[in-house]
Image (cartoon, rainbow, N blue to C red; front, side):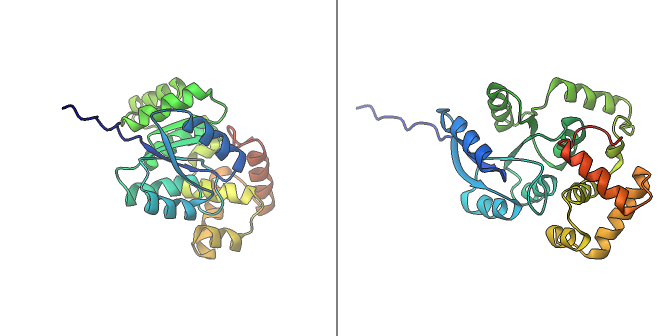
Length: 228
């Protein structure tokens, strides 16, 4: 007598993004795939960490810009807590500036939000297999950087900022004040002030007013490219 074989377990996906419409659309796309299952959603880093603990997904899809602690720091925390969790970044932020940072933090891939659905699904499945998923342009850039001995990238002035400084720069662009940034990132006001001073030094900015203006202009452009 033959026994029916159980269907293979579908990978469970956690969607992390603060835009309800995007979460809904991505959820519908993934649920339409027979080999994938959406197990939950999160709107920020705090709820993402809680969902990861409760739901134990196989892969988390996250944006870079999240309320409070940003996506890069979230990736680092998830990687430390759940080493087997696969991570894929789907964002509108310039991949030339954020893709390599995301991979260094622990993500397995980076896809732009305006990429075709087929490209996103392909990247997701590659990451689930333990492969790297980035655009050909970014792959070539990373290879060139490796060949040059990890020479500093000069294409974007913002490339000289650390991950934390770039996170602070983004929050400044959102109009947040020093104390608000400190509370959002769970660091001291003095630490935020130190980051701001370092950012101004690295970017050649001589005033906080200019810093806020430049950060707002950069963020309004979607975090694209170099600071002018």
